[in-house]
View: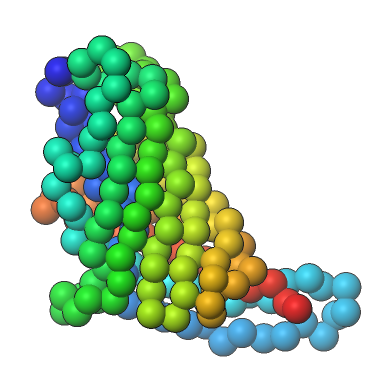
Length: 170
């Protein structure tokens, strides 16, 4: 397998591992306007302890990365001091191998925290910054939408994730 392509796969799997560090809430303010369907909810910041990549990659068909291969991840979510906050799991399907050593994946994942779950998805590449869509949640996060930005730090299999949640009003 091409070493730089394998490195790219490792980077995507690691960066898609959603982690938890500091959960900062912005005050939720109800909209006075009855026509408004949303209020801004909160911003969540995460760190993660990644599961080793060889345990995540499922090579289907020809050896090496190819269309349909899977990256399946399950990672421990911690705060900045290493305190366990939850887990994050999901899968990515390689949808295109791009020259020279890039690829594209469609990824689905869920962060499971003590007060609920947040699900996300997106079409991403092996670039350091990955935009994702928040598509729903459970518990305290029931009915949320929003955007997430995942950034690979480039060392120690570390990354950051910022989730900006729009809480749906009921």
